[in-house]
Image (cartoon, rainbow, N blue to C red; front, side, top):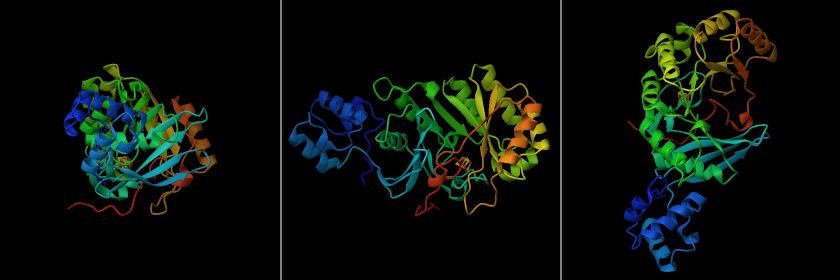
Length: 342
Ligand code: SF4
């Protein structure tokens, strides 16, 4: 694969990158790219000679390719995408009961955060993705259907690769590009307080989701090592700041692990943590991964836990797992054949 990508570039940058003779050619190429045409040869309003030159000199306007597609019964589709250097990432198109389609994008190859319930966490960090590589995932997924929402919830921690993530968001939101409302874009983090504070300072209008898993420091540290750097008190302080600065209602992702975090004590701690926060606790039964030691809670265990949450007046939603049978559900993304850099 070529490592040239035109996605994320302005018309002016395309003009300069491709050494085009006329500015209007850059505009034509930009418009083809937004339509999802990723082959110079198919850009029919560019002269044949120019198309041939572009193919000879740059091969392709896109730097990644889909190497595998898996679809599950809910319509969730997982793509394995090979990047220019041979690294492989996964991206998922989720379809909800109202047929709303959401692109779940990766921000890194692997992840350094090491959350114990997550397959990506077992890979370690291979490298960060560029803004172009993030945008290209959306371009590949959009060939499957009309995607209206984006979540940065695939492989990697978006707040650990913030600049390219923000650059990709600007492109997704741009009126000349995909024009996706910021309110339909969600950044999901394991709780990097410094990153949440940056989002607050920049007054981004995107939605925020924070992976909580436990509202008790010792247990959360055991499952999510980030808690040793930013503990629950620091996390809550930054969420209150986000909220006080006008940030919209956010989600606390709660991955339910049988026998671990779905009991009365966990509900009490959760009540105390959520007190004063304008948040919805999103209950996600753990998605099985053979190499990890957890068990998915039974329906009975989940029902008992939600009864406790009701008693404590905790605002929660039960999430029904989509994409699980293709390992495309939350925490299930991981790829082999990626070499870790020393
Ligand atoms: S849950 Fe997110 S932050 Fe944690 S290891 Fe997995 S990808 Fe990384």
